[in-house]
Picture (tube, rainbow, N blue to C red):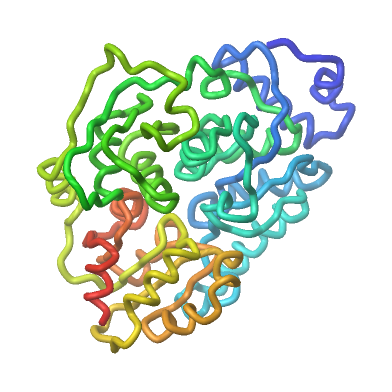
Length: 387
């Protein structure tokens, strides 16, 4: 991979040890994937925040990088392992809370904005079409590629951090226009589509291919849901929706495999993720709830009374929550408004064995990362379980 004079100086350690390590990682990634050069990025979004997922090894890396390195583009953080203000109410241990706080402070010393959300594109980190970015949260990067038209690969946490420090990323994969072409056409049949289960079914079909959807007209929140489920059930980092997403008209779909997904396929996907019957935790917000979703839930719950013994979480970002003061009071009658984290990256396995959710993404990760039996319901179904 070709480096210019400034990049060579960074690799030689002339800008500090942290920057040298970051450049070394980017060069290694570029060599692995056959990149010819580095391209400037406009922003970054980092995973590897929860103490549950990175543990002490991840802390050591962050401490080393924070000694003399700083990010040089706007950079945001993924959810942490707890609500930074309400961690005791979540049943988090003081030891976990201390280490989690230390992780976030390391990122803050690096110059990262510690918003701790998987939906930065809803307000705190909004890229533009055509911009190169380095994002590491699977659902967020898929949304950025697909709904926004920005360009990012499916970055790992260290790679995204290195790119944020250098302000560049290797030019390969989805940074190259030709690699953003669809590989399979998904023809959606029927109305009243559950976008979590559509993503679950489509991700399994697409695998690593870029799907092109026909027959749907999703809202922004439905695009968010679709992106999250496909990234978890497959490895989908980008998709197109005919007449909706910005690059859908840029490619021909002639000759591509066509797969129909209708009621039968959605029902089968739902059956596959439903593994439990009696949830101890009912969790909304994976990805984090948007302003519209909070308002919709508050409207659905208005006039109802709390029922059942299961604990209830509404997971969202502080940026979003600040825009919904009235609705948040309505939701608080039924459960906890949990910020900075979500049910997937916090240690719920220490308290619960079965979790109910309306998220296809969460269905996949709750079983593997949190040792949970899973009950899947749509938002209306979860509301009926708690009221």
